[in-house]
Amino acid sequence: MKIEINFEHPYMDAKTIEELTIADLDCFYADADEVSSLNLFFILEASLHRLHGKENRKAAARCAFLMAYYLFTPLTPPASHELAEFYISKALEWDEIPEYRQWKEIIDMGN
Image (cartoon, rainbow, N blue to C red):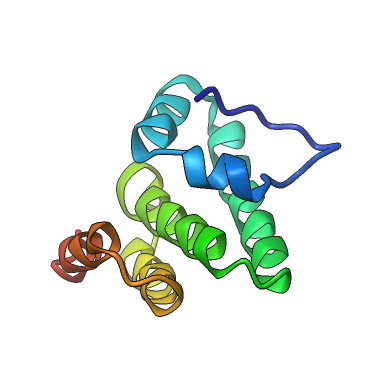
């Protein structure tokens, strides 16, 4: 799936979040400039707030998982481990699935 930054629509709907893969995030990061790669994180954050506010726990969990992955692997900002742990814990709280559990174990090992 091709990810685009759109300031007029700075969030993703549940369907888009549920279809988004970590490979999509990796491709975006590899092709994006630094500002766009950071802006994607904020679009995911805005999407998470919107989805959680609508009580769409499954999509909110997916978004939190994607944020944890994006912080921990491509972005790797200062404190990425702690930040990723927060989001992966939320993902598991809202939707306990093996993919999220597996990534929690990877994140728990640190970077």
